[in-house]
Image 1 (cartoon, rainbow, N blue to C red):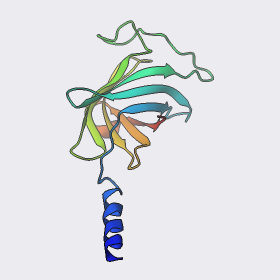
Image 2 (image 1 turned 120 degrees about the vertical axis):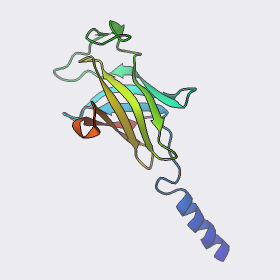
Image 3 (image 1 turned 30 degrees about the vertical axis):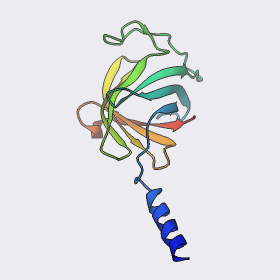
Length: 149
């Protein structure tokens, strides 16, 4: 009986909270922070150098918005590249063994602006909050992405 209680307590501690850091790899639905509607689908993958990169795999049409095919206001190397398949999120590095990722960058293919990026992954690994900013994080905006795979 005591063994079972000890084992259950250990398992509860081991699998709760941030004890086990999640991996960002997978397929994500981005949600528009202004309207709450789906924007697109992105695939995040782990690179050989232990950073994470995310590419657009689908753009979701919305009322009042027609998706662009080409990133025409984007700086090099994104200039005049197809938005579909574009690596828009690059360089994210995990902070120790936490569900936090920093030192990345993200490009908004609609405006061509490049922002610094950091991500906080929920404890269950099903939701991430991406913060894009210039300079300091407090002067940015956040988006929620939902895991769909």
